[in-house]
Amino acid sequence: MSKKVLLLNDCSDNRHFGSRMVTEAFYMNVEARGHTLKTVKRGHLYSDSMLEWADVVLVNAEGCIHDGKYEELLAVGGKHPNAVLMNGSMQNLSRHYGDELSRFKLVTVRESYSAAELAISHGFEAEVVPDIIYSLPTHFLHRSEGRFVSDSSDRQFRRGRTCAATDPEFVSKLTGSAAACVGRFHAAVLCSKVGVPLSAFGGNTHKLRGLMLDMGLDDLYFEEADDAMIATPRKADPSYALYAAERIGELFRDILG
Image (tube, rainbow, N blue to C red):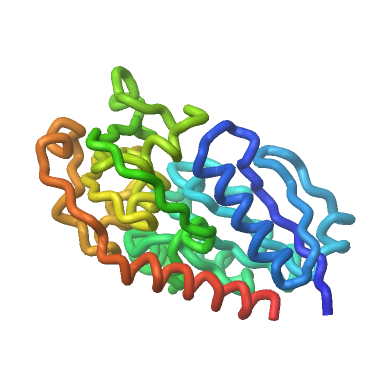
């Protein structure tokens, strides 16, 4: 039976390549199973009538719940019986949120560092399910000989970097490169999907460090961009991307049937 699905915190209007791809992946995974998806953009209010309309509420945590930001999303679990908090990374929450997290039907995070933080600081065991972008079709591009360098979510690394996350050609430049040095979480995801050797450097949360650990590339994560630039990049094990796509499919089958 077709279900009505409400997605909260749709970030696709912020010009960031990763946020646009995340929303695309939500639509693909919901509509491919014959269900209807409506979204509420980040920062926009949702009404009680919206929650009443929905059979399932998906809360896109997309790396934004950290250092006191967007913690209001954690209240949704107590407002709908089939609310799922997913696709996020969490760090340095302003208070203990174990009770709020337990009211969700399911909570998943994208990497191991966030899972460890929720367990240690909030007494809550979240499932680790890789980023939803892994479920999108993979397009292999002709490789150039150049090395791609991205900006970072940490402002100190933005000046003078080769490519900003809002660049319309970010994805094609990255996936067509011979190697990459990245300070963006979703850039590392794309590298592992298409087989671009990479090294990575610090952002404003632990999410990229956690992803590199999960991909078996923790020795190629550096706090400083200059250190990542001189490191020899390496491909992620392709089995991780395959596992990620399968795990995301399982997750949506569990949520939507």
